[in-house]
Image (cartoon, rainbow, N blue to C red; front, top):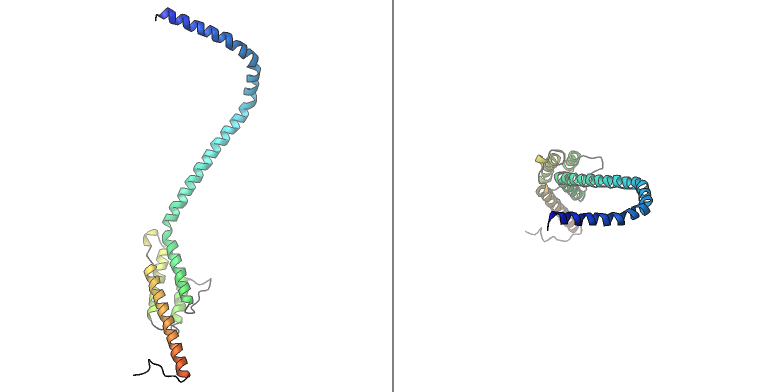
Length: 187
């Protein structure tokens, strides 16, 4: 194919297109002009709204990621609080009640004050250790987080032993009062 033939072909296409498009442009020119004039503010508002929605979505995702990171970091204080509340519930069984205004140290003092109702001396010592570790885990830095579950488990075990000993003493006292011989009293 030679260059003059290509030029001739392109000229014929452009002439044909201009003959077709000029009447269309003349007929629809005012409509296209009106649409462009009328719809550009709507297009601008929609573009701004789309950009705003995109920014809001990115901010929400960023905030969610920050919350997840904070939740992951604060698990030490959350588990410490959960273990503390479990210990409080266990101590309720021994009639050592924590008032809403009581701190962990005041609860420990209540355990010391209730020595007469507690069968052994190990529970107050465990409670002191627990409160010390709880305070470090709950109010300290994330580096100071300690696993309170073993101490909470020991406290639960001591509470169970105290309750069992109380029941045994109550049942044996009831049996003695009724004049029945107790099989544990026989030698």
